[in-house]
Image 1 (cartoon, rainbow, N blue to C red):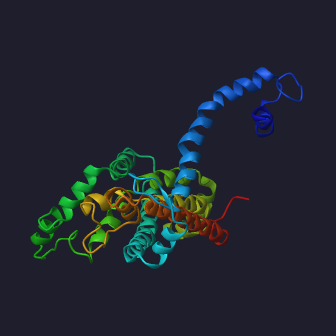
Image 2 (image 1 turned 180 degrees about the vertical axis):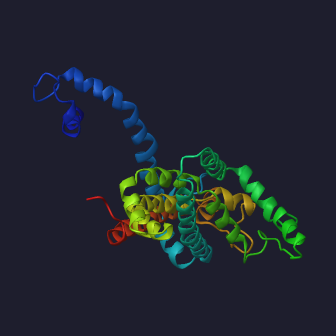
Image 3 (image 1 turned 135 degrees about the horizontal axis):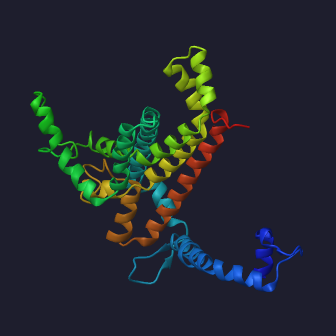
Length: 313
């Protein structure tokens, strides 16, 4: 049965001698090469997902056997858990603010550094570096030091006579520091935009220059429409990454989501429920709701793309 499915999925592997189907040895060889991927998909993806879906309907504390509770976990999440609703609100604000900002900054920097010069190449490397370091624990610790009451930010403000505050200790500003950290990691979408800018036909740009269009007009009438597929891609990818953010909030808040749950990200609350309170079934229900939320945001982005994304065809 596996071989017959492979023949349907991979028709390009049909006989190299003109026959309608490959020999048995060809299909066996294909199956051998595909086996590691198939095992990884089944053992590391499919089975854990099925297991987590089942556990989401149970009361499971990692120490005793799971006890079936039906939809009680989901009902409690949506109606009787104010901290869960707070985590959902914090994460939604974080996504809606940080993702557009990071994509916009990446696009502006990419267009600014599109010229092929030694200086531009240097700054590309400098701007990409935060994307390699931004998700690490070390950067989270550094961020705490920068925005602490005695941090570098307040030292700079004091030099101008401005009295700072403990930015990460004030619930009015703590989430803003994490948003700033996400925007600072714009290197990955910047590289994608750089590749897109390089693909814009020079004839089109030269024609708009001859027509008298200034740089701002060329950006909005030529660059943005031609890069709209890449903007969609970066928006979707950055949204998925932002919903899954965990390390910055964990490090900055010492794993509590404070102050006053102002940095209680969805994934952080999931971690607290599953591995500190040992309510693993409850955490699994949160994980599946997060999957559907990300899927809904992605579907909405693709639906809305028909109104603003332009393809060559």
